[in-house]
Image 1: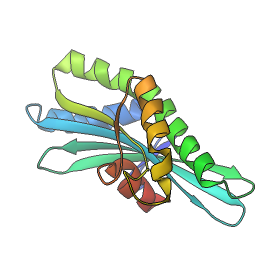
Image 2: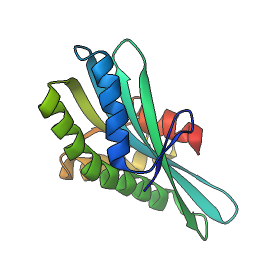
Image 3: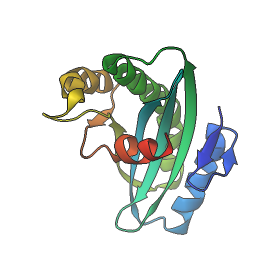
Length: 163
């Protein structure tokens, strides 16, 4: 499972991502940080590209991102299939990433204010809003704090950009 930074630098493992995050935290250990994880997808002729992003936001002062791509060959998925797959990929990465992040925080006392799971669904408008309750419910079932559009920037902005 390899990741890329926003600048395209390849990191081979999730532990490599944690090392980069620790470097960021060490530069300003008193700062407040927010973490968001989200996935977006784009279908092309016979393949759908899913991009999952981890965004570390140093509040009021920038941030870093990490992304991982996943390709599924075959027919173009229906909207509900795509949204469920995006949510599942976010949950899978969150289940691996959050324990490592919590260990880092506990060992060094960094201030992570919130950790969000971003769902690429609309609240009350757009085609995806009919799936909002299901997506939010999936995140909550895994103990994750959900965010939807327009606040779900890890999914709807960062991951979308790299699709």
